[in-house]
Image (spheres, each protein chain N blue to C red):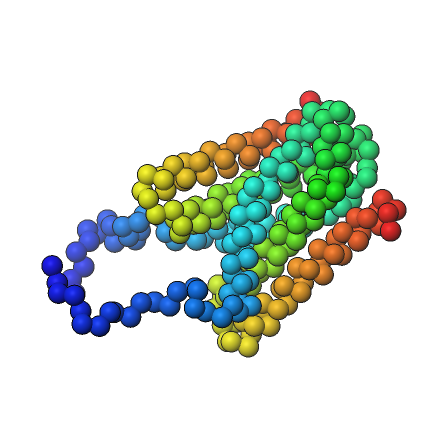
Length: 127
Length: 134
């Protein structure tokens, strides 16, 4: 059967949905990154159980800790935003409600992500 | 408009008629733990913001976290995180086109369920041992 697409569309190779494989790829890429990052978070929290405020603050202001936490926040929030989008698309069938839910998902992810990043930077940069 | 067929067309089997199977429950729980972790990021944000704010804010966080309800929530959060992480590892195996045999699927499901429970308990035993509560 003849290909009805333009040469440009063929080269771009995106299809009608524009971004399906990208969603899948970033979901898996962030999943892979989250494995060591989440283990680091778990280990950090366990190590800080029962520690006083000064110890916690000192630990969270170490550059290496700040950097790994920032990576975790970026990768984790991106991952959860993609995952929640799929859940919404699967279960919310009304077009209006679906759109509102996806907007809320983006706003929530941005808010939580930015709040965490701000706190980590404030600790790291000695605010 | 087409005529109504004499016999109703076959429908795809609905979840309700399936006998619950481990692999199916693990798939559902993977999604549920993902949703729980989504809102659980609020706890991470609270912890970091409290630490960045000062000793009083951090003390307030610690009081909540060490209460019975707080401990239950954090225990659930730990299990959800580990369960979702192990479930993700299974997905990596499937992404590589491997592990689709029925036997393999079954033991991977059992291994990750058992692993999630054992690792969660291990994390909490270590945490309680650190503060000398054990």
